[in-house]
Length: 464
Image (cartoon, rainbow, N blue to C red):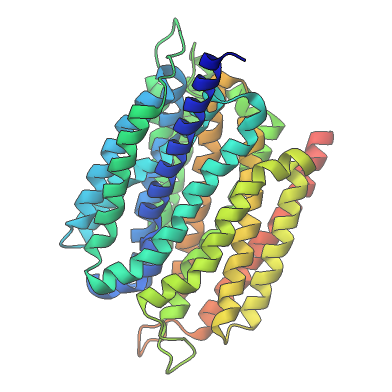
């Protein structure tokens, strides 16, 4: 191999490394809310259900933006689209850092949500700039660093909020995102656009975005407000109508946003189903644990400060990042189904045990670590298997569909967790009863166990 070729390979690996550090910064910005959510609820005077909305606003935007970003990245180049998305993320982070009230904070979260589109764009760049044999590992590492940002975000949120204010929780990670975006723009080679004789399927883009937006907002409203049955039915009809219109447009489009034949492949929709089940369970855990840590120690809780909540969640964040980094390799060696089964068994057992025994802090810490491992290896295995199993030109849109599924699953879990706590609130205090937490953990464990049934069902379908 010539010196010039060696130099190009080294530069590409360095640039992918920079991309991973950007993912770390984005993960930090995304997760500072988790340990500080009880603090934000007190500062802003909102209920657990409304607190879940703070956590989910970012995910709502992410669900809408991810498939659009993936498709644009496939067409126009991952780097070009990534840099533009990061400008929007930076604007959202700065707005959140200056927010004087809940509406402005939510707007900042909306803009930050486009960061979810960075994952499918990163997978496009990995496929284009690294040899095929390194793609599984690189995808796992980038995903792990995004998750690993949760370690940093979980660790710094409390000290920053306690020492400065909660506004700085958003400001400092945003500065890191801006700095790493400049590094990526400098180091990462440009990936050329894919030549095409067809224009972007904008009707398909708008209909899919409308479907996801209506679904996510409807999910938040249904689980956080006492809506009449007629309103719930109207939301369901709106989602079904938009989805039907999108399918009709995609079938007629010369160059559809999503090739429905790809979406109909068993491997693709099986991965989506499994990802949804896994992340719904994990989303419930992500919301419930900080709430239980923060409940006054005079009752059944622990009265933990924001800083200490971050420290107690740290082992789970580390476990999640580690499991993400090996999920792709495990999928290649054992197959994604075997990895999902192992993760589901661990998660279900941990949560069902937690439902009956949560009287000590270490019970919660251990459960968070085990569920993070189960969810991490399972979802990353499915993601890596999908990313490397489709045509290179479809990497962005295929992986973005799984990323959207992950986002929807986590959002669903968070909202269900918030709804369970609101329903189990004691009228005199407005605080959730201990039985509400036990119910939440039991439901999360049963949802995780559904992954085992889903694996069996999809396996039979594939054999048929």
